[in-house]
Length: 125
Image: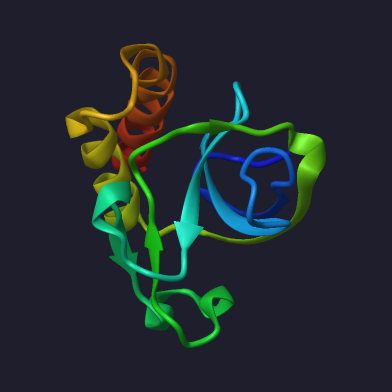
């Protein structure tokens, strides 16, 4: 099972049509919700770049976290956990979700309390 902000490799067959596996970021471990990580920047995905120098699992290539859609994926589809996002990128995800015009209010309301609770707990450490 994924924890918040874990980066995992997931089997996404049937979730998206053109891929078998994909890096994903857990944004709700209670509801199995994820954001996708893409190889290329695409404005339509309201993405932001994560740097290879910050994450060994990126194999020396910067990637982009797509923040336009939150996907529900069964945790049984997780192939492996490869790492966890740093706090700077976590804050960017939360900000992107809050400001998103494409993520539904239902999805925002379902994940933001969990994310904000995690962040406030992190600040207390």
